[in-house]
Length: 226
Image (cartoon, rainbow, N blue to C red; front, side):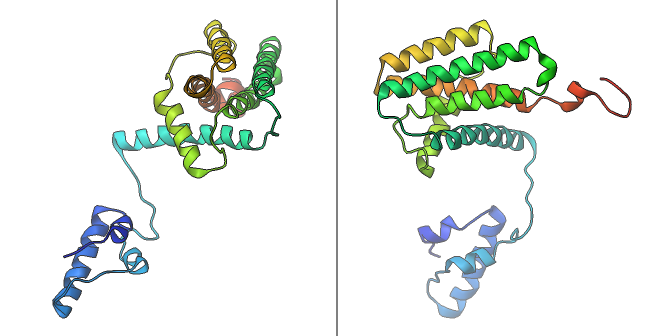
């Protein structure tokens, strides 16, 4: 029994593979030679076609974490792709510095008046713009699907993870200032490493903000404050 690369690419599960093998076996018995199935035939044999699949256990948790992380990276890259092109490298670095200053002001405003934006949405928006500004320091085409996957991988795996650098805190301020200094002075791999490290910090904070439970902020309207 022969399988081509194109056939194997269409296999979606172990159950699907078993059905395809049985279909090939039946056809080969009649023809007494190898049988190739086209894309539509293989897809039509998928027993899970049209049904929702569920993952369980550690694999499901890991998948959700990865999807959440990649969604934040894509949010940043989408914002970066919409930023205007600047004429010089210095301007690109200056924009990154300006967005860090904007973020600092948003955090200070929240600290002074937390009731104004209890869900941290203004800080969230400022974080996205910081990540976007640093993403424009990368050399890849931010609209290219494969480039985005590469960036997402570097942010999720290669960059330092779970530093606990809360936005506006001492560690955040030290690290963000250091990353900005390095992208300003460096180029190539050095710039990429520091830009993706800063984006990783942004992603960690975006996820933290997105996990804020409105019940903890506003309480249950039927029973009063939390």
